[in-house]
Length: 434
Image (cartoon, rainbow, N blue to C red; front, side, top):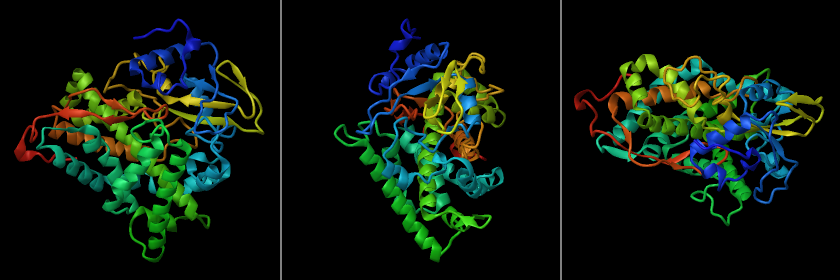
């Protein structure tokens, strides 16, 4: 584990340096930042020629993250959440209809409409489809004895589930995957070339997904089906329904955040099974009983979405947070990844413990109006796929170093080679009950 004699030298803006170093180095850096008496302040990074703002405060302690998420009237989302740099006005105007970048009554209205399809009852009704998809995915690899756990397992499950929910044809799934990779891999040369404009790539991918959704919405308007597009088109709260732009923005959020977060939690979970064989043994000894806590620990450990931004509202009174006095226009970047290792909240936070309870992580965002709408679905997907993996290919092992996504936003894995016994432990009874 690295130590830091000069905390001020830690540069969390350096994607090529800091965010490409070993994860243990990152944890040591955030441990050092968390131990500071006051919030560290950073200048804003360069991002595709966007004008630089005044800088931001980095929140690494759980108490500070919780203070911000609970005070949504003061710490607003409408100025942006996924980038500390203010995006161009034209992009915010076209794609700023997303629930994640709304505040106040407008956010409440849209959330009430879309939350009707993400209640625990509604998500549980998806169990059969999620189980079928998970079974198909393991069916596709089980006889091979090796595969890329990302492209062959973890990337397929949330993508298929979400696209099936929305009624997107299988022929379009690869296209959706490609566009979401662009949105969340803007700093990674495998997705965006060095000479490309990241803002232009972001706009193009968003526009492509929005066009897809507009086209499907037009079809459902005249020929409704039982998919989520038709449901949302007809969902009303107090006489109000989603606009076409709001529907498209919700779709972009769902297939990017909902797809990538679950995908990377699955990938890291498979990696952790190899890194911590004693925890694998505990989990295998009681799959049904241990899975609920193991799933939460995977999300805490991996923290797939590592940070989110908030901005102090222009009409807000100044507030003290983490030893600093913040006023209107000040930006904060909440590092959920660091808060989920805060020793004030987690006993021995560096330990991966599939029985950890309680586990008050903020892997789905902190408490407040922006808590992840898809948390129930994510838990269901993780539960089902790991039951499939642990019962059908229980000796799955990582066979090489994870190829990590270059990003300061998503703790992603692009490739993860694994091996396992072909056919599983019992070829005659390979279909596990889920």
